Length: 306
Ligand SMILES: [Zn+2]
Image (cartoon, protein in one colour):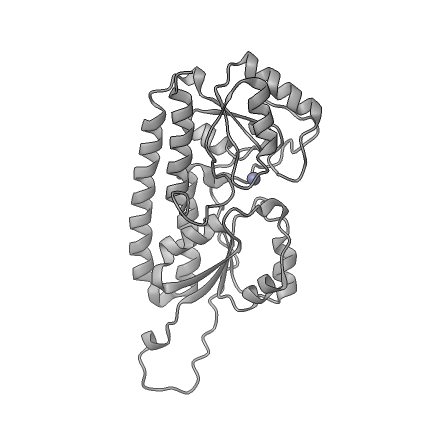
């Protein structure tokens, strides 16, 4: 499962009297995108210096790495990625950077959904069927697995910090458990058959499965393809037929498509939600804040009287 860990060799020179802790500078960790960077900071605290390749409001599906990214990787002691094909560009980038250290795949051991599951209500033939949906962090139970993997990666990279890492990880896991229960309670007031929501791309299938909400979207699990006129027309018919109350734009998406769908279907346009990236500041600047903000936005729209 967690193969490939190697502890970076410490270059300790010829010093002979300083205690080991004196050399223990923070581990440079490169995380592929903002959500993993936040989780890594939550577990790593002052023992890590984290760089996110795809920052807040960025779209990792279609990201194009820069020379600065290769440079960040070359100086890293640990790389944390989502895996599941989410960062299609990462392997090539790691190779070209010359980085040969450990790579933690945060989704290892998470409960996964096939991409086709998330398309069950909006089939687009021949696209993504059978492939795993990479947005596994959208269920808090999976985020706990992510935190476990990050703990393992950081502990291997900085064994002298094991105790502090373990303590922070326990506190973070407890925080995630509270969040999980809070989200479930938030949807309890909404009758299950009314829990239907439309977003731009299929990023919320894990959220839907965990909290009993059906998500529909105009495009697939990636943002690479655009919705055709036929897809949009079909979705609008479906919104009317199934009496979907609200549609949402994600922070990484062009709002125009969903705005049009809202206007033509009569559904309410909800506040911005966060699927594949955190916000730079405000409520959704951390993973916990992001999940809370999304859950509030969804449940408020579903309980609104209109
Ligand atoms: Zn996505």
